[in-house]
Image (cartoon, rainbow, N blue to C red; front, side, top):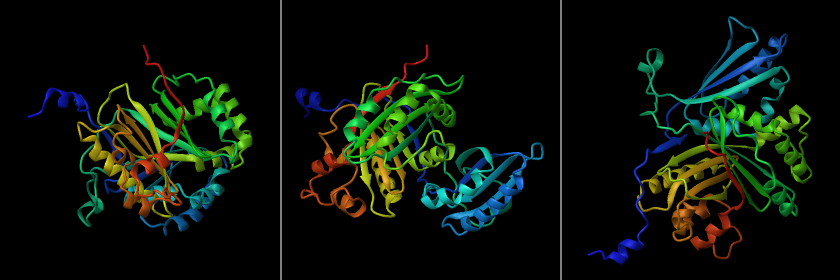
Amino acid sequence: MTTTSERASEPPLRQAAKRVSQSVFDGSRLRVVLLVDVYDGAQQQFLEAYEQMGKQVSSVPGHVSDQLCQSIENPSQWLITSEWESAPPFLAWVNSEEHVQMVQPMHSCIRDTRSLRFHIVRETGGEAGGTERRLQTSPRIGDGVIRHALTFTVKPGSEQKVAKILSNYASPEARVDDTTRLCRTSLFMRGNRVVRAIEVRGDLLAALRHVARQPEVRAVEEAINPFLEEHRDLNDQESARVFFTRAALPAVHHVTADDAAEVERHALYYQARPGLGMRLAELLSQHDDRAAEDPHGPVLRSTVYERDDVVVRLVDVREGFDADPAAALGLDPAQVAELTTLADGAARGDDVAHLLTLARMDLITDRRSAPES
């Protein structure tokens, strides 16, 4: 029989909430759409750059096909579509240094681009009736929020100065336009690595451009420039583009089990062993899916980000983050040793609580925008 005191000590049951989930790990095929606006007169240059890039892309593992289309109404507008066996191989390629170098010749003739990525849910006709094609089994339910992050490193020894600069800034106006709004910005550091997680309702690209134009944000970015390990010149469009391309840390998984407002936000940093970043992110995602189904569990929301074997996991908990280190870490010690460099040089590498301490990032600032009236 359960006593009253025992019931009181149990974590509170979560309120029923609409489950929100997004993931690149469902195994279905991926369709990528790239909208390109080419400078007038640069169409032939763009075509030649695409043909050169196409020869390289065709040999990338996971690539199925691509098409280049030109608008019949405006010759400056182009459309590139590609199909991939699944999302992980595409993300591994598009976030690689190889890709950064590959697309450089294109940017001198491009005014603007926009990339969209879709899992294929249904299809009719053509080759659909021939070979077996993996499709997304059911539509996912979202919450209208896009999650993105940036990560970069600063020069060793400058961490305290950078943390002070990043924590003391005036928040930009939350409203971007009639359809886009900044929801939350969370900034963490671990050693000399900085992670800035951004939540946006509406158009992510419009929000990022809005933030970049704000004088208070520009002042902070200029102030940390001398401390960055990778040089950048914000007055040089190409320098800024390359820096932020390398800094982009896309979300590969998100799950919301409870929409409770009063939660603690934590970030954990896992440096994967070479080539194992996406596998590590997938295991963390599977763990957080299971944790979100536990009505007594500490994890209410989690987002996993991955790029170039850097994996960051943002976790929102109501309470008890340290009470269950294994649930908070998301990996057992054997997985830590196999997939990450987390325990390298650590005398207590089999101690989950110690591993959790190694992974946790320091919160620098966490700012939510006031809800619209």
